[in-house]
Amino acid sequence: MFVTLTTKYYRELNVSESFFGILGATMALVGTVSSNWAHSFVLKFDRKTNFTILYVVTASCFLAMLSIHNYFGLALVVILSLCMYFLGYFMSYYLNREAKSDIRATLLSFKGLSFNLAYAFAGIIYAQVAKASSDNFSETLPFFYKYLTILLICGLILNYFHKARNYNKLTP
Image (cartoon, rainbow, N blue to C red; front, top):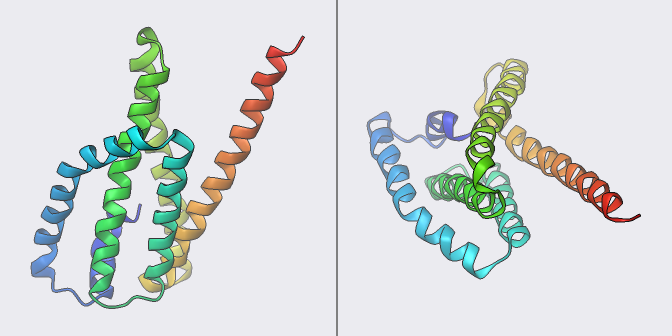
């Protein structure tokens, strides 16, 4: 959601609109190198560590944006874009590794559907937050950190119940 709204953040930083295209091209360049970096992470760390690093870096960027109101904020946007690319790579990598070939395409399609549904849900909530703040972007910035944290908690709860259910299947 934040990546969609980067132009609002650029305006908060007083970046001239003539540079928006250059910044967008920079994010695309980040995407071209991200898969090599993400692959080195999957070789070096386990899945849990990779997603923990991703959460900590993303949450830290969102928290930093609350207090950084100068051009250093652009570095945070680059880091968040990198995190977005890493997330996509990690999800595809781990799904491809774990899934049997006959259901892999279905799982990857479901991953895409899940991302789209999460984006839609975030968009609906963000619209309400923006409306309540009279569309003042700086007042909506805490939304991103809070939403990310809520998603993390929900994911941990789902993971706990999934593991508990699978453990109960294994015990007689």
